[in-house]
Image (cartoon, rainbow, N blue to C red; front, side, top):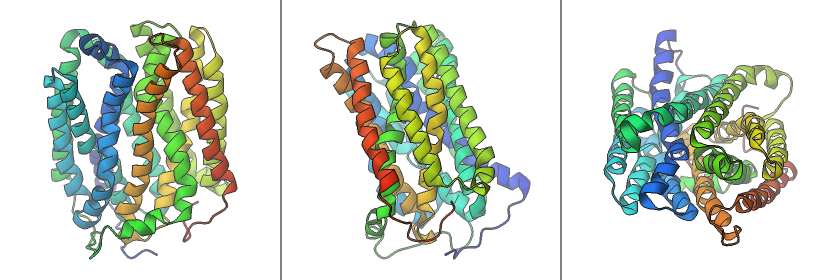
Length: 414
């Protein structure tokens, strides 16, 4: 149970804490999603195939995932403020490398450095919130963080598309480098110290991960995040752009506008979820019920997306965005089932599972498209067949979530 008292922050300071961490996650989400808009420029300049484009974009997730286990130890040992502020400077350096790159290798390296640098943006925030805000607010705060993140994704749609003729994709990454430095300074200089006792020094910090990964309840939800949540973010961050252009035959400007609407709907969905969570809990809607219902709706919509034709078919992505928002409840729900001294490691272990799925989905979806295209480059049928394969994989995870009736190790927020 709780061993560290959560202080009651004055309203102005509570807002400042949230805003500072949200600025870092805004940049993390923007950099995760930007390749969906700049993909045509990268393909034209570097001659990338679908598999190469997927591999390049997934470098972010590969590096991000690789950082999660050491990140959990650092967060529990040094605290959220110090770790996040330092890592955001690494992301700024990655943006500079990406902007200067003249080979695919350097693009990959820059993208990987970005992934390392933003790897703590959400985890540091959620860990800090556990010590600064009461338990009843945790899932609400997590939903609002996703609002900030989706604002970042919104900026990478029409605004970036409009900026490309003026500053090019390289200029976009120079702007991102500057904004990351500003976010780092805000977190390092504008936040108070964490509550006494929030930092923990374990004699065997890596061994604690065995407790986290060995918990069956972790995997009941974790398999859904590995497949469903990660695939949705892989689509949002990359493959929805090529889908709109190659499958639905939309031009670049129309696709950017559709992406803007898609991310706007997603942001409003997160905002509504954060507002509605207390009422849903009072009415008996548990996290399990919300997530299972949302995933079931997602699979039906993905089946419809896979077979729908005509430019109006892009509208099916909008309810998919709304349904996907409930998946974000899983991480906070599962992580709160572990003791406070494992907070950083519980959050990052779960994030490792999700980010591993994102890396695999962004890369393997492109590979699958190429394999199922029958030798035709960027085949519409290849995209549709790949989506059907993804629905089947996610369906298995939904069955595990619903029918594997293991319980949490201790009482958690519903």
